[in-house]
Image (cartoon, rainbow, N blue to C red; front, side, top):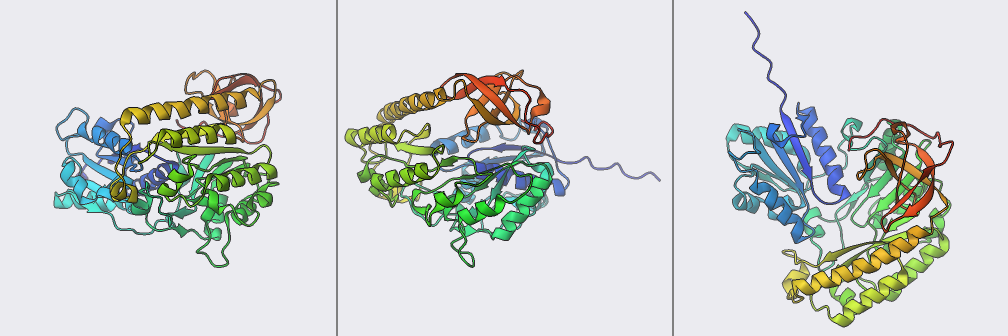
Length: 460
């Protein structure tokens, strides 16, 4: 009697929308599915399970997901017969079962702390032949990492906290991610050690307000304590953290980290606006004077520090005078890296309930472009300061614009493009900058290249 044929492994296809936290969550979800026997595929038409890990911070992000779902209807050209579609992440958490009614092609809705249950939910839907929604606020911090499922070999993210206790009036994160929770220092260090042992040389710490980490933990350690502890890990070359709130750089934070071996002098700290009136309506809990004082203290302690920022245009009630204040403030503080967004009301947020979305779309677009123009000027001027200088670069892989060249990042997170061989990926090298654009540096590899660590080429 012959044995029945083995069941071929089920295949999963992932698309990730949004921030680094979502990318990390996708890695953890993929790991859970792999342990249940799934393999990955890059062809959505070959997948038994299609997972869209979503963002809900802005309306445009949700529209992109709904557009993608429109192409995943049963019987359509890109959906395999019998395949299931799962929506995870912030959009899933916000809409819950409503998403199943709005998009009947969706079989599974899994919230921001339920994504590791995808194997179980997949089996339940297959067995019960009905869609399911799971949006409870469970706990995922202790879910063990498997290095095989990282998207990059030499860089990794570590989630050190989840949720947010602030209530900026425009922000949906407290609804989709829940209240703030900090992960114990020992757990973070243990994960960091395992990542470094597996070849990681750069770690980015993730949190919604990452510099408020630790306040719920015994002894109230803070982010500076954690960065100092990571600095002692042999083999770790770089540490970063995102995203920060300007109010939580306390207790001499900048002085305490200024001499750390691994700290990269690039910090993302959203200003959001240059008008105190609008900042108050946003409930950001600081003024432009307070933000300015934070930036001055940081730069005094770490002169080569690059501060990056987010800006919102078209917030309800924003006048031309308010917008001009944002333009002036951006020029004054001179941040070379800026991300500008048009306001969109998010359901259930205080601003959506209290304020009319009264700035026309065309005005939002113009104001957005005006801030982006200032950003381009500031970024280009900053990049010009590197011409004829050698910069330290962590090599990431082939350039996305020219696969015959390599690209990497400086400690200040500037992209550098240069000629070199793939065996440099994962190394720290020295590159002499010869030309710049507003967004990138271009140069020549200095010889000899730094032999710090060499790693396999990460899949991109």
